[in-house]
Length: 453
Image 1: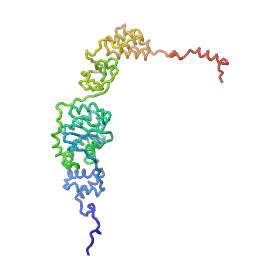
Image 2: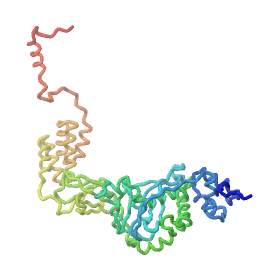
Image 3: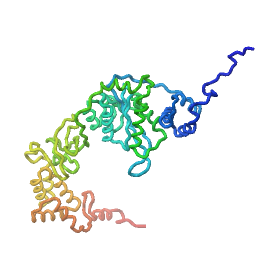
């Protein structure tokens, strides 16, 4: 009797009675799944540590039987020319033991991915900041042996100070680093991760495959493990989108990368500094003079261990460059020094003269000796008169002139040693009338005065 094949039950591959080649490693696979590792990571570990000879499909089928399969989601992708674009991003790295505390701490994973070949550089750091962000770019460029013309990034503060799709405000240090290497930054539109989907995929690939569920005794050990995985598996894989080996495509792309610069990038700190009445900006306790005409304005300042550079905030033009000075010192070019006393300084000296004769003479002597840099000390003398009273400061200034030490420091020390004057009530506002006026007003009320209950 012939039986119709339509009535026979359909046998799925997962129900095959043939034993899987992964069965001897069932305990290891189940333990890896409990850690959250995926089939690719488990297959790579089996090949590296257990001399596993079967292909990845065997492990994938075995994992599917243990936990079920998932349907992959489709995503759009952007095709770029070789050497044109790279994408960068941060992600969470593995847990590693911190050398200072001895405790496990989460690291940060920096990833740079080339847009054409999908070649990635993955680096681990403990903390992030503008300086670290720029140094990671340099390390990644050196590992690649070249630089792309465009770097696509998210709107994180290390790279972008003010997001704007048309005119973003880039972090000055990051902007100058890319300019030094011949590249430009291209920030994504806010909440548009698909624009840098290649590096997003590279971050997730590292988190799901080599690093999932693992802890390391040092960040150096974690980086060495990641580098070995990068060379052994990530570079030799057939990419799912291009259907080509990553290392082969990178060999095609590398000649199109821009060459590395001959000189290293000079890192600096930056910030905004107001130009004080003395015509200087203050950087780490030292004073540097910009060109005339900027008193009261804020200027952009860059500094390192060698130089201090003052720039125009609107155009970015370099206004002045000075050698770095120790705290308390000042420098201004001879052509920038005022030929006569500025009106703002003359007004300040007049205020001192009105406060007291000796106070005015001491402030005048300070200006004659120290020039515009003495403006801060003149303001200090007037501040002492406001806090401790004019009488005590006048007495201190008179003594300073007598001993020929007309300085803010002498006046300050003398005033601070004076005993505190007794408190007394004073008429401090013309709206507060004499008590006799209130008494007469009460007496003129009907009945002569108020009666208390």
